[in-house]
Length: 257
Image (cartoon, rainbow, N blue to C red; front, side, top):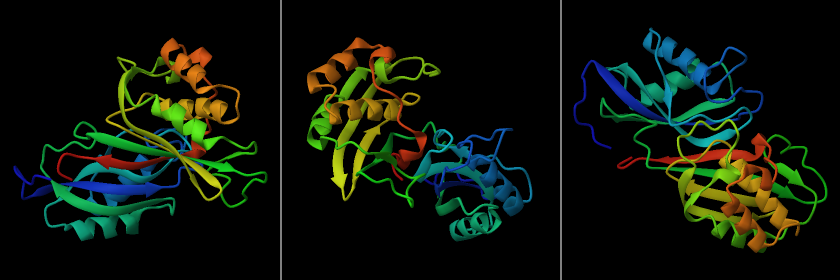
């Protein structure tokens, strides 16, 4: 990441964050409950001794987790990358949020607008009995799922498409067109992992795709039917929205980070 145009009295830091989204209202600071951004800004204010904006790469909904969220903030020039990580973690008022790393970046770097790729993981538990330990971490699906069929259906989403069939009604994006760089469905022990990579996603896009892929997995839809629904550009024809707690923001990529 370029370190040009760096202000010696103020440093801009790119931080990587993980969090358990259980009982949080999501990333964005809100008045109706605790948020990831709110906790980080409280910690940042104590670290910097003044109100500090923590700008995320994007918003995650209530209940959604992250293993690789990214954000930027400005800190005093004397603070090292290590000091920022240790200081934020020391001042965080919840064990549900942790800062993993910090990296000095150019003063005009923006965690949201400079991102070139985002990655998500959706975890499904595929077994007869529910998991007591993963009840807020993965969606339990009792019915046996045809993972191979789900993967083949997922491959039909790679490329540039109108994803209106998988777009939430409240989505404020100007266009439903998105380019999916990667989409796969794989087994991992008693879990099924759905992974997706793209520059950007529509509101609820991955959760709506997951709900539709499950319809293929249980044999309700054929792969051809899934493709037909993709091309219908009609949310009413697609499957249900998968629960938020199975979704993870896993990675944000930048040109040189």
